[in-house]
Image 1 (spheres, rainbow, N blue to C red):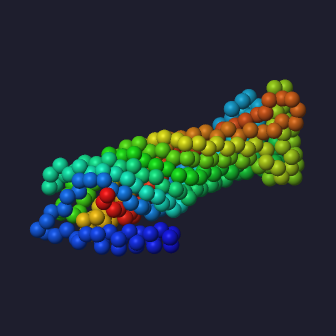
Image 2: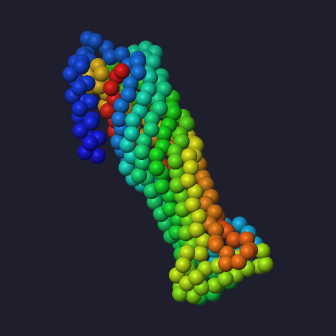
Image 3: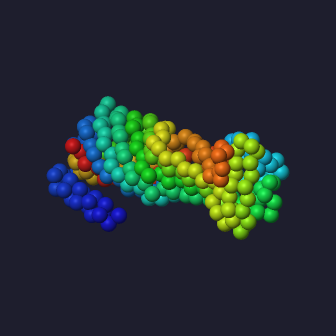
Length: 272
């Protein structure tokens, strides 16, 4: 964070030295390429439910509430990166543009739910799920309106993508182990052990929309405040057990709701 602030300050003073502020007698022209840095914070709520994916896990959960209850969590964290773009000023009031950005992210969250399984009476279980957004980027169009020559208000939207990692762990909370099978599938778990576990990670695509303000403090330096909504779709994580014999391991799915987050960020931009 300290390095980011120092870099912004350096860009600010270098840009200010390159050009004087626009004056009323000389209207500011937004047409051209620009690049800059941004820093901000994001948050979003996530829901997770659980479904069996084979006959044994369906029997294991039973139909009387043995299945782990649905849960939810709030993912949040800092983010920062850069943006590149181009503006076409159409007249004194309007402009259109295109922009791409890339941010590293610490957005993450987790939650747990408790259950007691029909085929393992007296044995409590905990299902823990988590999600981490490592980085994300967008490719967006912008439509801007100029209330004054050096103040731009805009709406924006387009494609979003990001690397998302999810985990699911199902744990036996008692000292009693068990092993169940139906001749094809098997669930085996020792006392105080992880019974089923799963994870997934990869780059996922979606969409984004938002808006913001750009304020030209000089010919080459622009300050920005921006809001974006980013949605990267939904995903299921398959949690799997390690069978003790040659049977097929039983599984169930942790179904994560839409991976969305709201972003507020500030930026410092240089005209190129």
